[in-house]
Image (cartoon, rainbow over all chains, first blue to last red; front, side, top):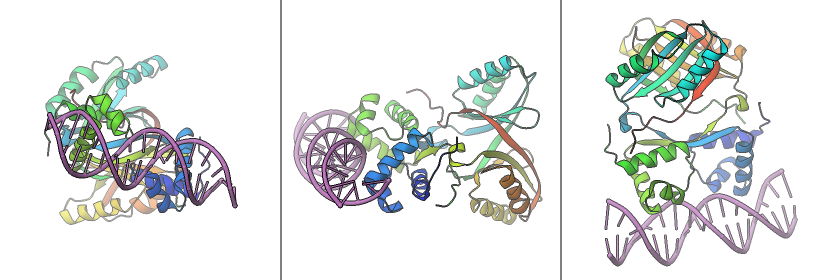
Length: 157
Length: 157
DNA sequence: ACTGAAAGCTGTCGCGT
DNA sequence: ACGCGACAGCTTTCAGT
């Protein structure tokens, strides 16, 4: 799955990570290529799955989502079917913006974004806990976002 | 910090979260406004800080970053100066793509993205542990990304 | 492979409603 | 506040080096 990337690709990727709306001509002078070449490479990188998508990054607080919580979930047993059903349930919950399967006792970590603590309590008690197979959950609230890079550490080109 | 958003704003935000490169005319027919109005509203939303930025979302594996780890860090004591120095150190580490301060015993959770386990070990032992004030760290490796929404759950417009 | 120019669209700005 | 229209700028494609 890793793709062959040359120095220009890496500089392009760094640029579009930092500014996803930079024009091709702006990117061109930033990486030292022509605009059309930037366009081609971007198309190739999208095609190859290196670029998964493009999006606006929103401010949670500004859209009324005041609480971000991390929820550690432990399932009872790990038969495939149970896990798959759990995954499907997570996919259907918009408050769950991310779900990771971790080392350790095969725990999940969920990132849950909701308007307030009341909404979080309702989510945890009425929607998450009742899911079949959920043995226990443990939650932490995010007090402060100390760093949010949002961009991956690319090797230098 | 929450901003007054009407239904059009919410639909616009949902649209640009899903596709950050949609043209204004495409957004226009999607939300039921004219293109110029979409442009104006987007400018206002950026100005107000609702839209923090625009970026390409990359695939970690495809760019050679095979390991994502979550690192829980506990500091020795919590005087302001120590915490600030720690924050500055995190800001200077590109492998740390995110750092959250959590409830509990004022622990930090870091998301660390590196090429492989060897690089992670080097990072944890040689760069993170030696930071002044770091009392202990505990790491989990991400085995699987079960869900990655990347977009916030906006209230319906 | 990359560059450069031409054609088609898009974003932007002002005005009218 | 919103929509419409003109101009400038950008994306895209195609031919050339």
